[in-house]
Amino acid sequence: MHQPNTQCISPALSLAALFTIALALRLYRIDAQSFWYDEGLTIALAIQPLDAIARAAAADVHPPLYYWLLHGWVLLMGTGEAAARAFSAVCGAAAAVLTTILGRRWFGESAGWLAGIAATVSPFAIHYSQETRMYALAMLLAICLWLAFDAVIREQEMTGTPRTLRQSRWMWWTLYSLTALAALATHYFMVAFVAATALAGALVLRRNALLLWIALHLTLAGFFLWLVWESRERLAVWTFAKQPTDPLFILSDALRVFSLGPAAPPVFWFWLIGFVALLALALTTWRTSPRATGMALAWLVVPLAAIIILSLNQPYYKARFLLPALPAFHLLLGAGGSTLARRAPARSGAPLTAIWLIAAAVTPLHNEWFNPAFQRDDYRSLTRAIAATARPDDAILLIGPGQIDVFDYYFHGSQTRYLLPRFRPLDPPAVIAELEQMERQHRRVYGVFYVPYEADPNGVVNAWLADHAFRAESRWYGGVELVVYELGSVGAPLRAMNARFGDALLLERAAVSSLNVSSGDAVRIELHWRVVAPPGRDLMIFVHLLDSNNRIVAQHDGPPSSVPTTAWQPDETRRSRAAVLLPSGVPRATYRLLIGVYDPQTGERLRLEDGRDGVEVEQ
Image (tube, rainbow, N blue to C red; front, side, top):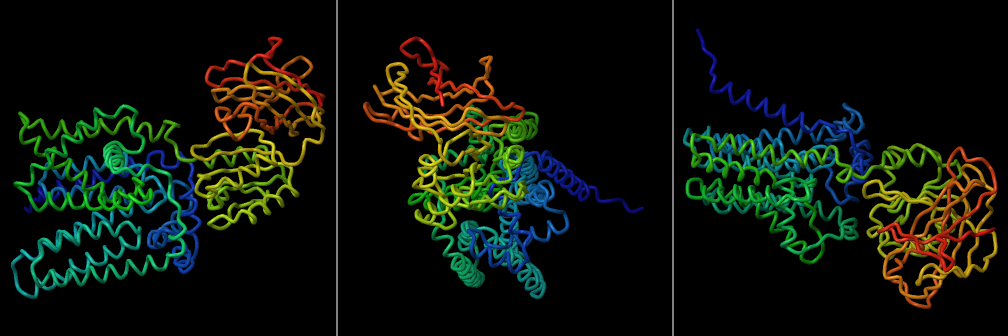
């Protein structure tokens, strides 16, 4: 009777189990968080026709391949958070399996499975496998690129008939070429990963193959330059996040993120010592597996060096650009763990290394899934907050304009949207003209601010709002701030106050709009301050709206101006504008208004000369 080949079945079943576990981790709570800015752009682009995607990609900072693939995916699966993100989850799970296969081929069984375990539970890989962006696909293509390159290298060492060798050669060379093209068409920084394989091939290929290798990569370089040329206008005005660019920062941050992911706990040095130790052990494999160790190092070091060099002139570094190098990191961890296993007593090294890799991922993954401090920007909750209170004639102000895609994914109200700035670089007169138009047509505006230092680096919009609007309330949803403003005027004259708070601030004059208000209304306040002495600390003001029983029915807390009080100088005057929004259920009545100043660090209120901690402002 024919017996099944258990030696073949066992690895296949193990790889299937690994894929299942990796996919389950990547699908767990995949829709718990809102789409953020970049994901909104992705969905808006992916639902376009293929030719429209190509045209839009030429005006974007990313090539079109990922959007084309996602287009087909969402046609089948839909555009919900879980459905759209599942494409990245599948790519990430497949990457874990291929990491295992490549690790077994390069460093042996033990190293391969340890690398696969590291890839399966990697917080960095899981984070970007739960995001509707191209980074998980780029990581998968990087592994495929090195698998194909490894086959090209092995092919030149094979023996067989000339015909068989020719067929094998062209198959692997074609696969490598197509994978390289796909990588370049997925993300521009993938050129660094193609350069790494090109360099490795130049060092190990023989003469005839080397000439073909050079010709192939010259062709790939031409394709890459064409892609860049097509997007030259967008790339020329693309602004970068204000990240530190010091090479030591990049190296330390890359080690942290590669090891523990973006949601690493505050105290992570203990775990990093272990990761560094495994990497150091991996370097000892140079004596037994020089080619494999060299390829893994080239895969890791060349892109890292490239991003360090690019960041010397401008802050280009983003950890996600290095995600395609993560499998090389895992391969080296596996090699280090395998070396440890051979030296440990009673074959305990490999199991203990696997347990340690899993344990290191527990806290970062818990933070990733459950800790609000590590959540993505929450447009879902932000738009719900607007929908709960916005009136039909209110306005939505989006700073920068690319938010419109993710905003409209969640918000379906009819309120007018103002997208500023519409063009980069920002045109101040055009922006101010649009703000003035908004002021003429609306009484309340919901401002949504996403990295305003990129969209409006000189603060044109904020300066205009400080002069013309009354800031009512604000709240952060991750890295996005929602600010509610009242437009118009107080509609009442300034009254003398001469109320001195502590030794620092004198409230000289104040004006307040009608205090006969009800639910949904707003009370506008204008305050004029004189600086008696430098406050020496950042102070806040409170504005309380009180009923006849001295109960607070509504309030406003915020800084007295857009300039922190630590920067206020003696004898200068400052103007504050604020608004108090009345929540639902507040009956119409004439209320009283109380204003005070306090230290937000201690909660201590500054006293008036008569000992009170607030002054009442009448209409």
